[in-house]
Length: 111
Image (cartoon, rainbow, N blue to C red; front, top):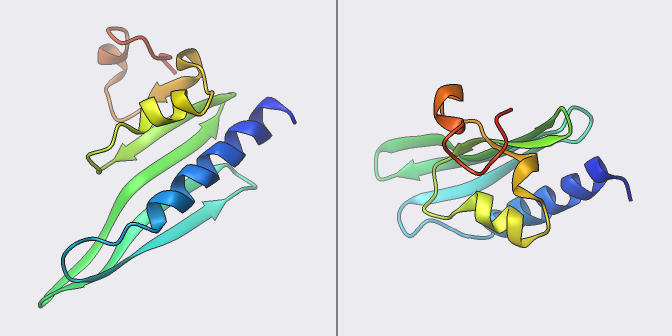
């Protein structure tokens, strides 16, 4: 299995697992949006909490330039560490929601 396919499988496994976690409030479900052709993977919370509409991304991960880009992590989980635990090296993970100037102070890829 090549590197990109390996990363894709790991990301899909991770997001499929998170999609099974139902929020403790409201009538909300996790909607998986997987674009395997362009390597964009997103988990969005959709539903209602009382009279309030919920539509918000919880996790978005892309693969670009042979690296895993964590675009959004609105969970309490350390998604980057989970990816490392799955075998993706730090130098191939970009914490994209940090500004490029801040990324140089981490052990992760710059982009």
